[in-house]
Length: 559
Image (cartoon, rainbow, N blue to C red; front, side, top):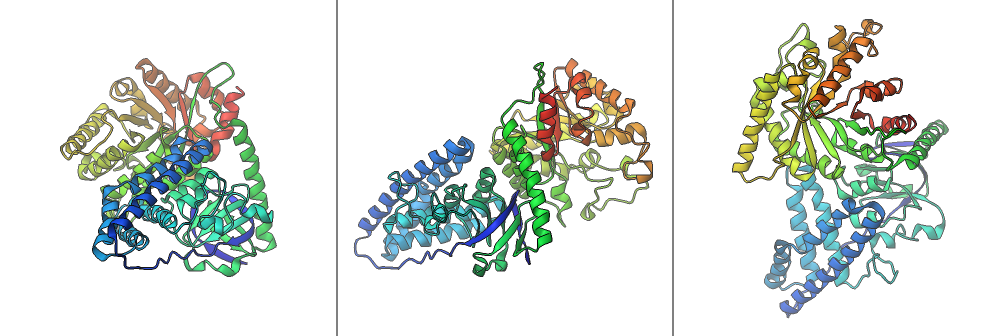
């Protein structure tokens, strides 16, 4: 057995035979031409044809996966219609007297290098897109037919390798695809009935290829680099799209374990098929919004795969915890914007950084505290070090132009803290207006209710914000005076305590008195033994781990 570690881009398990796709040679002959105008006309005509192909591909993807996922190919069409792109190609034709194919290839390399050099990982991933659309134009110029042709004929690079619409179907066996890389347009045309999963040497979790793999429900791993070996063709492999592990020629113990996990996943998928798209609503008609909690941008895939209605808690501190230096505004904007775009119209509630207590970061240079759970953490850091806070708020505001983002403040104990945070938010808004940067002017702001003080002040807090989300982990800790990091206190730290449930009830009632909604984003939200209690108390939203969404929806719909 050979074990390879890659980067997870789409969750799931695949077990099957490997099909290695040969690398496609994009070599284009450089020819000197006598009539630059005629060559420019060829280029423009090829762009028109490519745009028409992309329109067809867009419609196909929209019909199968929805309008939101088809927007990628609108972006590809816009690339082809970008005056800068056309000017670059036509400039090369005019100045160097070269054929259109060579000019397109050269322009693609220039633009791809420009994108790859950017700080934003999302923009870096666009390098693959510009190569994809340019390859499409080169195919048209060279007389190759595209797999989206309406007459049913198929060609294209992926088709030539036998993976698109009846490609693998001809040999009758579903395969795990190994490739050096896959273009977004190739991925969109995969015959899902014959492809079990994807493994590529190159690529990133932010690429449109990765997003399409997640949309299609294909387990996918990228970034295996030099471990990619064409000799693996025909061998049995297991891929774990959650951990990013690939096992070539797995031993019997590994096969047995992954068959068991796959069976469990298929049982979960059966529940998904039964409940996908169904409202989270009791038999009596009580509606509850069912969201999911995430810690990283890549987790958004699991939110969609489990059919959550949105993200109720994005723990932004992990962007700080997983770095050795301050995350820049651009880095954070990239992360938040990626999630917002992937979630489309679904809400994305992002908690501002909750550093401190059990989450320590060296470069924050926090002093030692005897009791950090009651110390300098979360909103207290943000309000006393506003230069850190404002960087995050600017990134959140900028990302709000790309989706349905809301901001949530943790560890609130007073109305003044909320007002101080809102003042810094208004400063950030004013700066962005001055810089003419778009953002959602009416972005919602909420608070986490996780201290007894915030419960007691809930009526006053509700007048300041748009929503409450109860963090039951800390609320239990502070209500019962039990350090949740201390295992010897486990018997005393009972989240089912009447005192904790009374706190939750008081919070919900205060929210409703002031016309705002109230949810739960702590672990208690997924406790099925309390679902009936939460429904009786009138909870509006529950945000849980992605894998808890469907079991919880099932219980609520049967209530």
